[in-house]
Length: 69
Image (cartoon, rainbow, N blue to C red; front, side):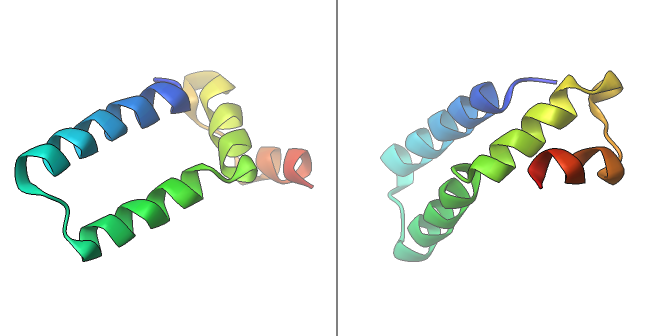
């Protein structure tokens, strides 16, 4: 499983390419902003890291609740 930073970089490149070729409409820009805001949440980053570090890239919810408090 790719790291969350690699995935974010790939997604950013796709978004930038789409924006350059077609222009980003207001609604699309608002959706992207919402997505990037969610990805910037430290809890999200920690969850993705915990899941990626787990065997097979999967984790039980019981293994994720304690580290997040």
